[in-house]
Length: 95
Image 1 (spheres, rainbow, N blue to C red):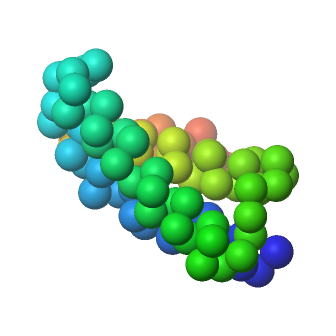
Image 2: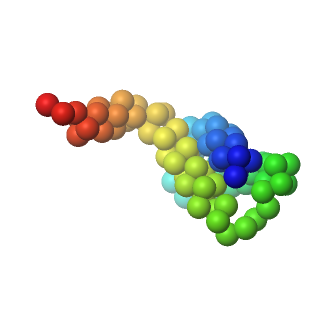
């Protein structure tokens, strides 16, 4: 389980620059698809390196990490991340 959490964190970190890159590309263009799929061989390599394999339960950790990191980096590039965090904090405040 510890290796799965390490791989999940590494997948998140690896995908940040690809998500940032994707945010500046035309949606559904060839380079947009490359920005999404280029890190997949790295993720597969991490799965082998940390010996977590491809059991179905691992996807519940890896896939959300992949998607959320791409989404956050895209929002950071577009300058929307600060607004998103402000909305979250105001909803969580106990005023």
